[in-house]
Length: 97
Image (cartoon, rainbow, N blue to C red; front, top):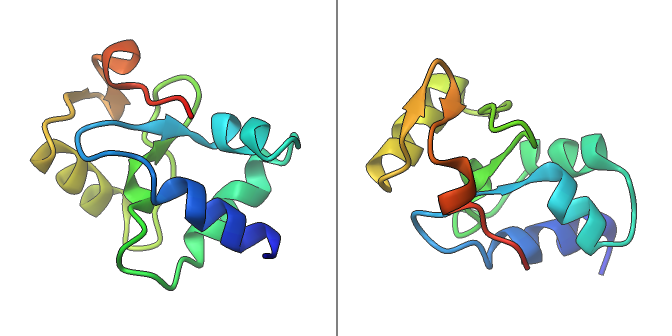
């Protein structure tokens, strides 16, 4: 399994209504390559991998291949509260592996 596939496998574990961070995924993979995690998620070919549930460590929304507005819309649909492009209840909805 290559790096990107490991990232997708972890992202697939994030439950609906929860988020995790690029950093948490990188640490779970025993590396500090947070940007590489984001890059892999940006190229996510699987519709079943909820890459929209991965955000910045400071609660910021982060990027999304289909646009930040779509990411925000998808997160809100799952009950995530967002204000000024940041997760409001970050610690409450944070998922750790």
